[in-house]
Length: 247
Ligand SMILES: [Zn+2]
Image 1 (cartoon, rainbow, N blue to C red):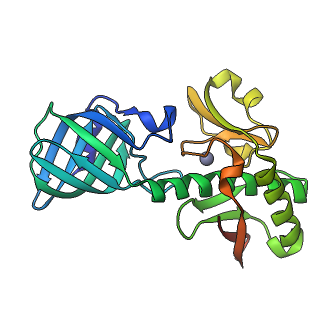
Image 2 (cartoon, protein in one colour):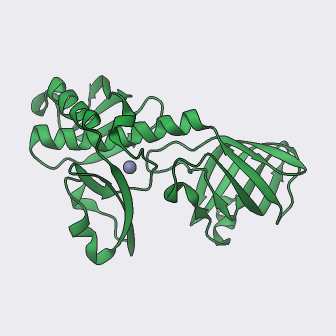
Image 3 (cartoon, rainbow, N blue to C red):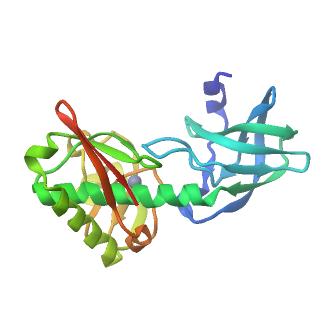
C-alpha cells in the first residue's frame, strides 16, 4: 500500500492537540482500505497520535457497526492521519465509529515526553550552554541523544536533582500556536536553536518558567504527574551521548 496516495485527502482534525486527555471519541470514516486481515482507516478527526517527533504511535480500538480495528500503528502522511491494524468485519465510508485509546501506553508517553523537555532544561542548566539533540525516543526505553560528551561536561546527580525539582514544583505545561514572525520571542531555553524548522505556524509547548520549544507531541498538564525522572544509563558515543531515562 502506497500511503502517499492518502495524503491528498482532507487534513485530519487532531483532537489530541486540543485535549491530550481525551480517551474516546466519535469520528466519521473518510476512507477504508482492506489488505487481507488488516486494513487502513482515515477518519475526519482522531484522538490517536501518530508516530513522529520521537513519540511512538498510539494503540487502541476503532469500533463500527459492522466491524472493529485493533489499532496497532498510526502514521501521518501530509496532514492525513492513517490508522493501521487488524480488522474484523468491515467498515464503510461515511459511517460513525467509536475510537478508544489504550490509555496506559499513551499516558506513559505523555509523561516521558514531558520529562524529555525537562531533561533538555536540566542539561542546559547544568552546562550553562544551549544543547542540541540528535535523536530521541519518548516511549518505552526512552532516550535522548545529545551532541557533545557527557563525561566531560555533566554531573549525573546534578541533572537528576535539577530535573526532579521541576517535577516536584508542579509546573504547568501548556501548548499554543505562534506565527513565523513570533517564533524567536516565543521560545526560551530550547534545544536546537541553530536549526528551528522553517514553517508558517509553530506549535509551542511551554513548561512555565522552564522552557518553551516547538513540539508536535502530547504532554501532561502539570509536571507533578510525572512522579519521578530516573536516568537509567548513559551511553557515550563519538561526538554524541545518549541518556536513557524512565518515569
Ligand atoms: Zn514535546
